[in-house]
Amino acid sequence: MTNAILGIAANADEADITIEWDKASTPPTGVESHFEFHATDVPTLTQAAIRLAEDQSTMQISIIGRVHLLAKKQAGSAGVFGVDSLQSAGPRKVRVRLADDEDYHEAIRAHEEDLAIQVSGRLEKEGNLSWLYDATVIRTLGPLDEYESSRRGRPEGNPDQIEMF
Image 1 (cartoon, rainbow, N blue to C red):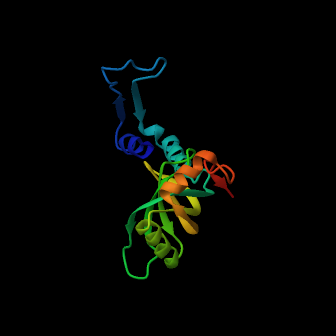
Image 2: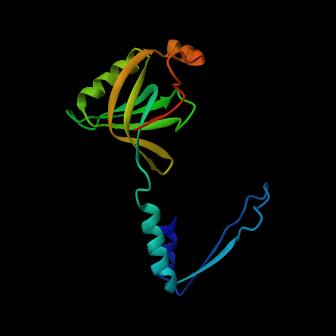
Image 3: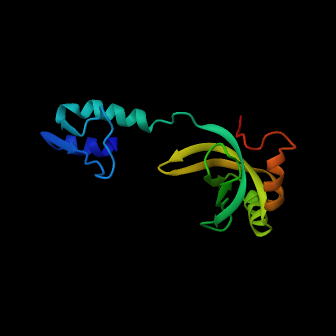
């Protein structure tokens, strides 16, 4: 959004932006709805865009979930798949970009046999999507239905917690 405002302000003497709130809801109190930007704001907006785009805090995490959405662009590539998290904390859905082709075969097996899988990688948010980059498959767990029922009793620690490294 900062880049869009930057583009508007950079090519105009004055840029007006007005936010129209949904008529069905009450606008938040103390929040402006009209903004003016000038070409002199471009350096500040540029710095804001750079800071917002910086890698704030990528962290290594481990997620346990169900494999879906398998994709491989070309033969021999590591592949990408989606995980619906079985944990209550953290993102509900994550796209996983694997570091190793062999792990993709394990993800396929987990998908075909309806097994829970644990993956670990560098979590990053891109728009509305959460991604695990340079990810590896830690282990394949038991059948999804058994795993979900065993979660309720939590016999082996607390699988609702995201492990951070």
